Image (cartoon, rainbow, N blue to C red; front, side):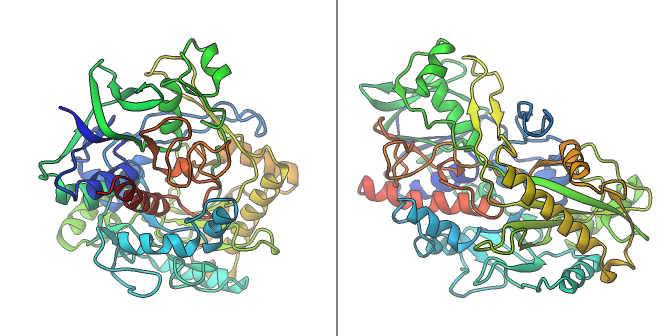
Length: 526
């Protein structure tokens, strides 16, 4: 069977596109996802995120050794399940700063300023707390206040206040600055992934086909136009209108390069026939590097205690009966935005308060229980790459975020970590915090901090920019997200961001897909 639109990648963007384009019953839409379904209950319970940090529902990739970080190799979780990142993330709903999008417009991306994108954020939302200029109700995506905060969260707000950081009840509203409870992509204390929000209500549409376990091998092109896709099993599927790539900031450039679209020298070297020499594919990789403070608590103030089997069972029962308690927590529903550089145009550090000490891979939970405060520098100047290791479509890609290539990023990252330490040391947290364990008292000098970071940092899972949009000839896609040089091919996901937004990237990715759906309908007069 032929389709009008074939969408490669059933993540946050792909789920939105499939639902929106199939609203027209005359349009035949095929959504292809390499991963499996989201039937397992861990995907729907907010606290299931803790299992995802260990690799459930992901490709199992890692970075190449980071040459500016003592050759550290970092686990690089990329979703491999329907709903993509929205099915395995910590459900944090943040949008970035309004100035992020205004900068996109200033870079030549007309139609992508904050006032241009705000209607699409609102369109996606079904917000349980706000209905105003910045928020909407009635959209597919559940956006809710946390249902299981703990007293230590309020103490964290008070501690930040002791350093002059204000409480902010809505960090996606008029002002980003401050600390508070994050809004979450949840509805009735269940994860509201893009798959659950957009696909699940519409799976019975006769013009929408969703296939899981269907990995695309390459995009088929003929005469400078995308005509369809070839799957790993060799089968071919044809698209009459467009092929749309929504495989993410790693997956989309990877698939383009496997299809012969990318840096010509790189592809030649791997024996891949070049359909289009486009050096920008897989370049411009940006990501948020995460550093963290872990402190031991004075008592059972976090969710660590529920790691014990009998308490875990009780927590599960509580959740089933009341939708409250530890299982209703995403563990990272508290945080905020502040400044490493006091002269920055908007907050450049993001905090996530983790309600436990064994959340990060490789860090054991503390007997008495602990708490984690993560910090990430939001506007890195370093740029990395995604490249192929070989022409084999089953081989893992070479992911190089190139963290700290620019020394400015290193300085700001460590300033953010030190600020996190200062927050944890304030009087307001003293009833809850016994002692800092990481970085700990032995880390004092700048060299000590660098060494600590090169042992304990991680990605915040926010890769972006690898199929950059722009109005210039070097851009991979134009401002309507059409691939420059190949007709009938579009890229819609975080890879099109010219610069990574100053926050988590899931809500912006959903916004990009909502806006792209309108563009596609307009371009095809649907």
